[in-house]
Image (cartoon, rainbow, N blue to C red; front, side, top):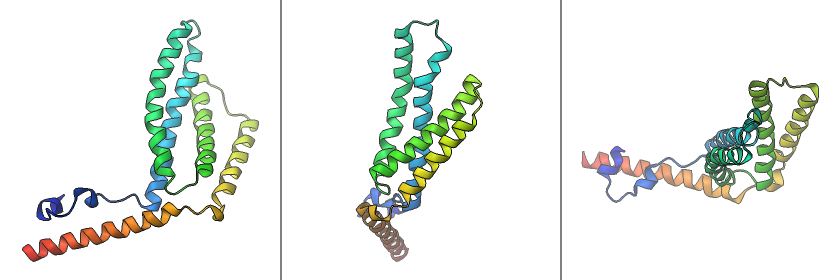
Length: 166
């Protein structure tokens, strides 16, 4: 922020740290977890309230699902910088199952069974298999890494300009 005042020629957007490879992946996973939490509540939360009218359950579910979309779309956009679409989908399914298992246990009191554990292991294997696919290198990774280098150069140049003014 200090650099923005001392370097009027430098666009403020270049001062924001770009999404590094690891940071993009971490934010993608966190956004997917939050998104799937909302969606699981929207899809299954109404089952405890069967006495309520169906239209009310639909309306409340849609209101709960709205934040899910507000998280899912950015997660996929951000994630597609470092993952292929297939990798994103398989990862999303693993996260969805994980979120649902916790939700069912806490909300409905349904303890996970050995079958759920086996399903989770199989989906985890699918995630490992799809992430290990080296042939699906993303061209965006090169642009992402180039963006990080450009940001670092911009910060160094800004500091040098500030030092010259001092």
